[in-house]
Length: 296
Ligand code: GUN
Image (tube, rainbow, N blue to C red; front, top):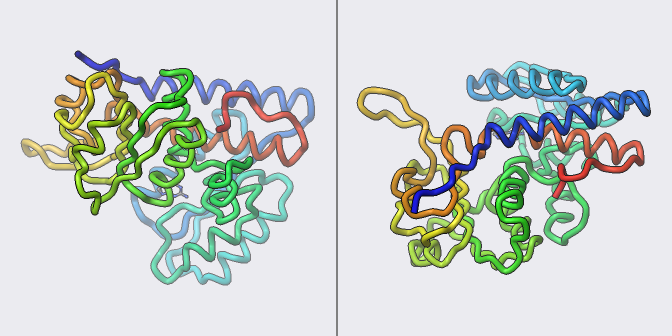
């Protein structure tokens, strides 16, 4: 079998188009423009690239982008003060504090200072709890993007066996909650899992989110399974820098029914879902109907 390649770039473009349509309707019918505030503390080069990309795509979707770039030495007090201002600002519907933060800042404290209704990352403890109890919440962007791709491919996920490799708060845990919400039988595997190959071989859906280059070989994959590769790892090969996922693409694609490539799979979906979450937060703030197909 040769897997169907799931084109995340095209899918993300479709989501951004749906977001832009909804934004145009909010403006025309209600005079409302959704606004997203992104806070970057410090000069981490990868974070700078992400933040630039987020700002550009926010504006392209017709929304307001508010960027706050702070010095690496910014105090916790000053950052909390900015978050309080953004929480109180009616033009700001979504707030994202780019992670990682410099070491002297307490990430949990900062994230939990964001108004949960504006927490478009879905990292606030209230949103984590709401998602875990099956209530309406803001959903972390990368797992939301994975869920959208899986629903688009399969329709219903009910009764499917899913394995999530990785137990991070940003991807693994919320991904498992979302799959459970769609009635999958979910295994969360991690570095201490006794027989990882066996756990993966049982799965109709494999979500790999460990951050270890090409860790999952094709002979772990059940023939016809769907492989969602969240990993983005930079490696050196043949004297060149290359981006690879957590799955060994060629051997997995030879066995899987469908697979996301790296790059061009899950990656582009994250910002598309951030824009979707901002529109959702804006609609909720104004008591308006939420965009269909853009939430969990
Ligand atoms: N850093 C890497 N990924 C993310 C993300 O999804 N959200 C935030 N806030 N920071 C990140």
